[in-house]
Length: 150
Image 1 (spheres, helix red, strand yellow):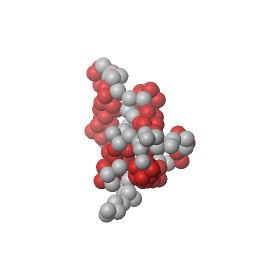
Image 2 (cartoon, rainbow, N blue to C red):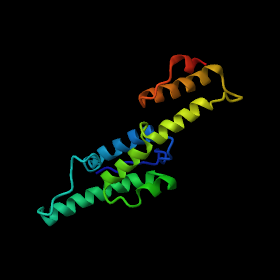
Image 3 (cartoon, rainbow, N blue to C red):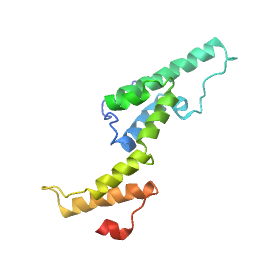
Image 4 (cartoon, rainbow, N blue to C red):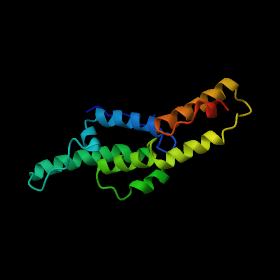
């Protein structure tokens, strides 16, 4: 199989989850190990042959070997005890997804503390405010339009 470079993918740092998720999921799909991550290729039962178990374990380790180097050290602490690719993916999603309580709180904080930068145009600033508002709406925490305008 052709080797796919991941050097263009920024490490998951808690602020870039949507981009990271898209890029890493595509790499996992290209390597044909996505089923280990999304759970469609479940771990073989105890009754499975040794060869089937080995094949599954090898693919699962490959999926983890793709994901783990693409997370920063702070994110790494969350996945140290994970033993399968699905556990790694699910844990990172739980912690970093837009719908997590922590991300909702952080997004509210960014919204309410927003300040226009010295080199920033009004149009750029309004675009960032609209993006924060859109994120809150996607997390089922929409602000009234009047609050966004103010």
